[in-house]
Image (cartoon, rainbow, N blue to C red):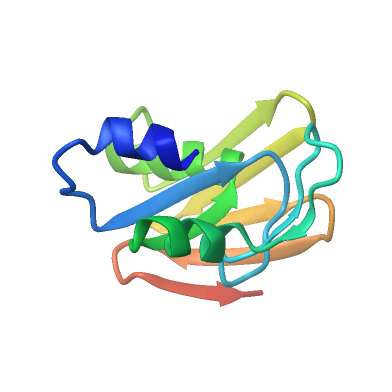
Length: 125
């Protein structure tokens, strides 16, 4: 993963790395709680590991949440105040954009995380 980051950021311009994982993360975006399709991945401090190897701030979240944020920012959801994104893959992931507040659902631990992407705040509901 670190080699792939170096190949993408050849001029070392990146300040922050964001990674989508195939499963739930902790509320602070630091620990991959479980990666559904990666055996032995339980409570992996992925953000800290990537930061230690790249010297760049790193945050992680579920891959469906990443897709939803991308759609809200530059994709099909950008012209809507409210939308739901449903992803079917190795599991089921979903997120909800409501009045420009992004709510991520984690089916494994039934947490709801609200991310206000205009103010940069994260709240566990």
